[in-house]
Image (cartoon, rainbow over all chains, first blue to last red; front, side):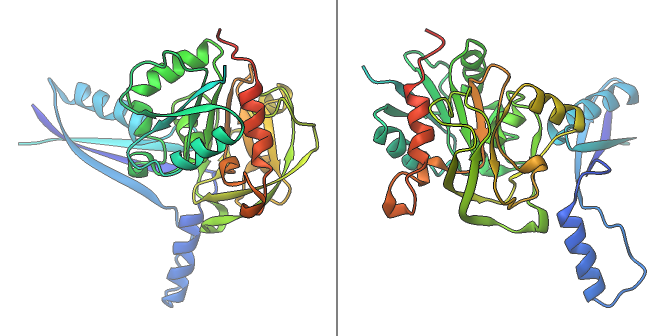
Length: 84
Length: 224
């Protein structure tokens, strides 16, 4: 079966995010009020061929841990969806 | 016989010529070592120079750690061989797990390219053996992701084991504890953000880099 995987990588809470802070300032410069706590991150999408959803998730999650994020400063969130 | 130093070159590395020139200035025989090499036979020390290995795609150092040469570098380091990562090389060493912590984007998102005052924090690493604790050095930095980050437990163990090698006198990038360079517990693997190979002549504004490179070259090859 084929599954669509999304791995979202974000800095861990407490790790300074200068990119997010700069985007925050740009939002204010646009004149838009009420937006705060911007955190920048990255998103990876790929297809996984696996027996079932659980094993597809295991593959995607392991990629998130071992390659797509640096666990020292980042955490990742994996979501999996079956493709028709 | 002079010490033979491999200057590991990845696609995107751009400080390899400077590194070779700096190492030759302190009497070493320095050779380019392409990243697809699988052995380090006949090599006494390894330098991972600065640049943008594999385009810094994903994160600085994240792809370089999969280059074939890195397995040989890890074995060499485990046997006590001297390994020094400069700037991007430091990022590669942290991504490869050969040094703790990580290099994060500079605070304020500024690209830091300037001469930088450093203080020698310990003298048992292969890079600082010939120096004195508290000695001041003037060596340039040139990086976007040079802010050293680690958790509190790692920082405590770095301090307790005397693994902080160099500190900034004025913090240019938000690094924790003003850390400019660290080593492993054994002291044979060192990573630093400043570029000693760019401070090898008064014409360049400083020749303080020669103290560090000279220390590396004069350190006895521990793996032999």
